[in-house]
Image (cartoon, rainbow, N blue to C red; front, top):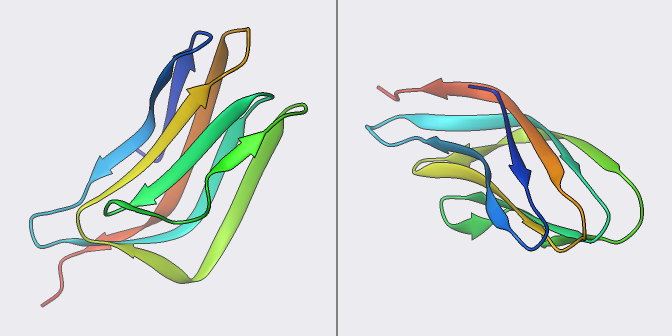
Length: 104
């Protein structure tokens, strides 16, 4: 499912978006949209490796959309994890778009 979300209470962490790849398939991530908030930390990980530096946000709502050309390649899994260090509950959202295929 391209769009996934997760509500986190203050002090909680959790997986906002997850997709296993495996089974001989390869995923190509072409576009990522992630919504996060003040006093939160976000991690975008492919196959256990952070794609970007951990993002810490201290002021206001941020909606991050990035396109990747060439696309990012995943062979095991894709995961977005959020850490809510704020004093209020937030609903984090992520949409990851691309293709998955099985090489011949």
